[in-house]
Length: 313
Image 1 (cartoon, rainbow, N blue to C red):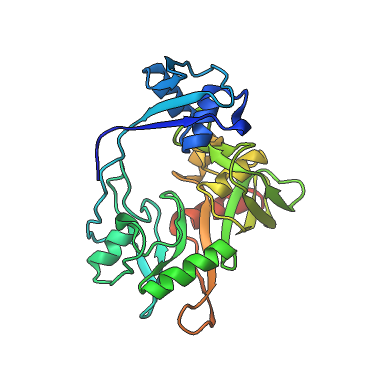
Image 2 (cartoon, rainbow, N blue to C red):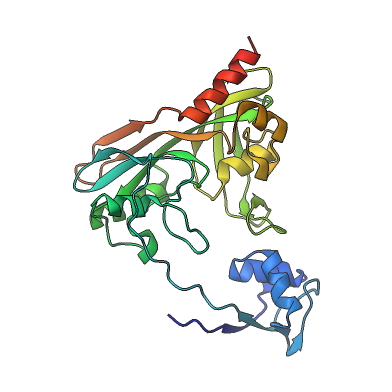
């Protein structure tokens, strides 16, 4: 893989007429407006041959030249024992794991901590070779700060069929989230597009031009300061539940990235968002039977929930 910068030259599409340059670049190349602004500030963006600033309005048909940063070097999977990573189910085609907090699904640039794929490799599990080298067998992911159930493909046919199920939204992914306050209504659907946050690369946000994202929620139990929700995802965007709950002004308890109250998190002893993948169901790729798995709350979430419940007694 080349590690040299890449230059892209193309006309501005009609649909971007009148857009700010940073917004146009974000839509064309899929990176954040912050990154687009950085490229413009360093003279790496030309409009009709002249350097352009981030706030300049683009015209349809204008010639755009962008020097894109070099792609990152491929990330290697390092077999490494992962404490707390529990195999729930295993056969010739799939392995279902219960992922602890602090573990990524797969290696990625900038992440030096443990991964599910590295843990499975260290334990001797054979994983599908389908997918990018660093995420072979991974058909869906959980955030580093979210615990719970994941399925990883072991065979090539399992990878293909599971990816199809996720695309067609036939997988039953259920989460429990403890959110601040009381959503109104207590049962509902959030249908709001998500994309990278326009100012912060590490966050995501509800953005008009984002990817369609749908979250269904239903209150299980209400407390004085919070509500426990059962959440079903139709789509699987990065940080989807966290972003949608924050958009409702009811962020996950402990989710300081998306506006949760740090005082409440400290009182409950939480160092991450209260969010757990409790149930995962899918059609088995070998014989088309429906299989379903459940996961208990880990100790930190169970303890925080008991404190909230006691406060409401």
